[in-house]
Length: 166
Image (cartoon, rainbow, N blue to C red; front, top):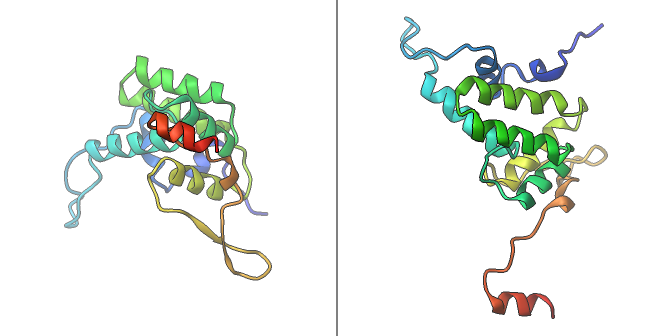
C-alpha cells in the first residue's frame, strides 16, 4: 500500500521546504557543501517564504479582494488567510512566518487538485504565467477549472467606472 504524507509534510521536496524548515526553527546555512556546489542560504530561505506568502495570500498588504480570490481558489476560509497575514505583520521573524505558512498548508484540502489550485493562485498573484492542464479525456490543454473565481481590478478613474456600467 502506498503511504502518502499528509498535512504540511506532503509539500516536502518543493519550494515549501523553506517554510517547513523555518517552522521547525531550522535556518538554511550559508556556505558550500564541499562538493563544488552551494547549499541554499538563509537569504534564499527568506525569499522563498516571501514568495510563498504571496502565493497563499499571507502578505499583510494584500487587498481583501486578493485574499478572497485566493481563498476561493485554494479553497480556504478568508479568516485563515487573514490570521496568517496578521502573524506576518505582528511577528516578522522567519520561524513565525514558516509557522503561518504551515498552518495554511495544513488547512489545504488533501486532493488531487491541490497542484492545480496552487498553480492558479500563483497566476492570480502574478508569480507564474497562466497555467494550462491536459484534459483527462482528450489530452488537450485547458485553463484551470478555478479560473472563474478571479476578481477584476477596480476602476482606476471615474471614466473607467462609467464605461463599466454600460
